Length: 202
Ligand code: ADP
Image 1 (cartoon, protein in one colour):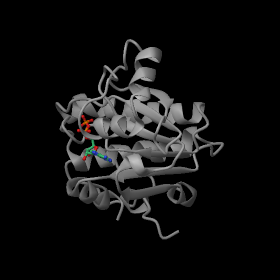
Image 2 (cartoon, rainbow, N blue to C red):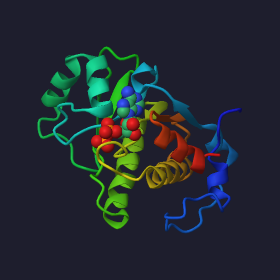
Image 3 (cartoon, protein in one colour):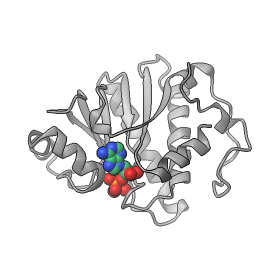
Image 4 (cartoon, rainbow, N blue to C red):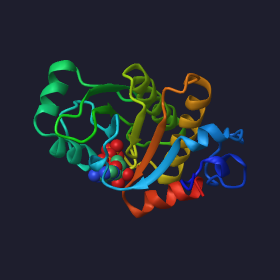
């Protein structure tokens, strides 16, 4: 109960000024209790699924993708290529085992390279939705998200945090009505992302 809540985001006045979205409803207490924010290396988390900000090829890369592949070992890229030889579309998600990671699964999603809010926000929303849907379909009750597109793909941190929070809120309230997702963890790494989530999760 001491964990940060997403309530204040929706109680108005707290939204980043560049976010042109309509005021959002206040989430239920139940939804707030299922959302956490932590600053850590995502490869350290023993959860049902960690979310990788992957590349279309699913062959690994820099940033969090590289860190996850290094920690998981070579079995991860082998499984990616065997199961998903065509890779993954931007805005979509696929799931693999966690291999040498403490996490049971990795959900790989491909965020948009940031162009403009109008062009990129629908794709970023789609990433979060696809990950949550994939988690439910694969009985993942605990899911930890890295920042999608907030590294070299250049998505502004405040807007990305707002998208992440609003999609998760809507999914937990409207689509996961059976409460299959027990815990969503937003994982931050750099100061700019810590600050962005703190501005939407006071
Ligand atoms: P993208 O290409 O989607 O922008 P990046 O890997 O460059 O992906 O960055 C995504 C986010 O992951 C960034 O916010 C970055 O700070 C963060 N990040 C990088 N390494 C780690 C890690 N080991 N654990 C958690 N987050 C990380």
